[in-house]
Length: 367
Image 1 (cartoon, rainbow, N blue to C red):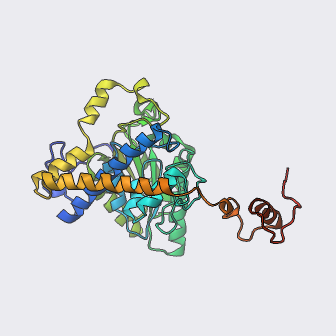
Image 2 (spheres, rainbow, N blue to C red; image 1 turned 180 degrees about the vertical axis):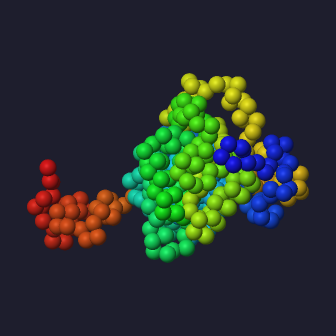
């Protein structure tokens, strides 16, 4: 499957019945709801960035099937090491939408106290590690967590996400090589969205695919239609099960398309072919899955409208809560660095808060 494109759901909404994953109607509608909510978040947050209400945003628009389908393949005990466009996976794991918006706004609701750029979500409770803006580093982190789980005998799998550009990094080579050698329980998911910022995929590699690179490392590689949520789920679920059974890692290439810019700082019209863009827009993952659900009568137009309204209302309510929240408390400037604050940090904190808890000015302003 390293060269062929695995597909369950055709663009017209029909399925290859023999390839369907084990999902009931309720589970499929839940996937659809997650996809619709993800797009609602993207639409509103990009607008907020343009209005100066948040500083930065990277959308998932066009990649909802890849993100939601892969995230649904994991168990709650598994670990997620995201790139830029996997925030929906954190919400699928039960993270609060208000905290999610709080991180984007940088208010007191943000568990990281406004210290991270927007979209750099993190939650130890949900086994979701913050992305790094350094390209590719999370691939090694995912491998390391999986290797630790194997050594400890923990029945968990780690999933490391990346874009096509990250496959050119040295961390990609190191992570896949070590993972294969030690049969690490890890699934590497490359969301090949055709552009590493402005570099087109054709200039990223001369290989026939990303998935085919897995052969050199001694692991399976699967190339899947990343706009087909059912295909992504099935491929990733099988890869997770394989890893949990002790059979080692898998490289999944989800072939998809980034409908917006790399981030809110990017103008994709400067490097993107308009005709190719229009072709990909006709393959929209939400439209495709909606057609299937309507054909199978799992939803009807009224239910679809209710889902759309639910998503937009939930997002707008969470934004209102986050924007009404105060900034992070001043004392958080001095927390989360040391297990026990040293005297010079205590002195600095006292100076800011107007307290006296016995700190020392010695070393308070190190060169």
